[in-house]
Length: 259
Ligand code: DGL
Image (cartoon, rainbow, N blue to C red; front, side, top):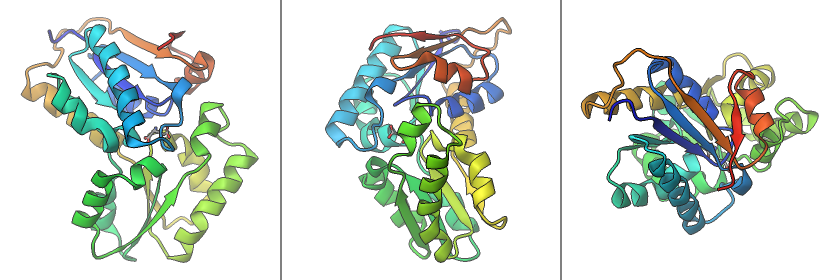
């Protein structure tokens, strides 16, 4: 049982940023990653379609023998994880924007959050913000257009730079000192964001927290792979495998799979 893989899915290549954190913390684990790039972006879709797509990805990972599933997508987590947990007897780990740590640490009492429309309009996001950030200003910004650019490999293009400058302006005008990256695609923008943001603004994403939570749940359920053998990491994309392979440093095979 414990040698079975961890399944990870996202609407595309973005969740590989989460896979990397999991691989650092849990190097003995076998993994299967699904990039549903054909249906990206999820962020502009409604809750029922996001849930349908999340169910499809989950069933494929369960068919492939996964012991736990990481929903490496804020949009799918905030819209569909409740249904997934109610429908399947397998542990699910989700990812949500790191509003809580930003709210606890901000000195200017203003934090920015960049996420998809699907995440920012979800009931779960509303609940988290209401719980942890009631006394601070949260400047929300939909990252319209960012995911398609990342999906086509344009991480540092002029178009990306202009979009980010546009989205950061109201946050900087509000004197944020934390920027929360509420989409698993966005950590790939950190190098560019560091150039665009003034040095006092800190960037927070949820990747490490997801990896820690994955480890904790595997430990608790006695599912950790304790055998030190060569691990098997499989990557599947129904979009362009080459773009994903590049994000993974061209050291893993990414196979095309129609799903
Ligand atoms: N990477 C996803 C997220 O974390 C989804 C982005 C999208 O497909 O719109 O929200």
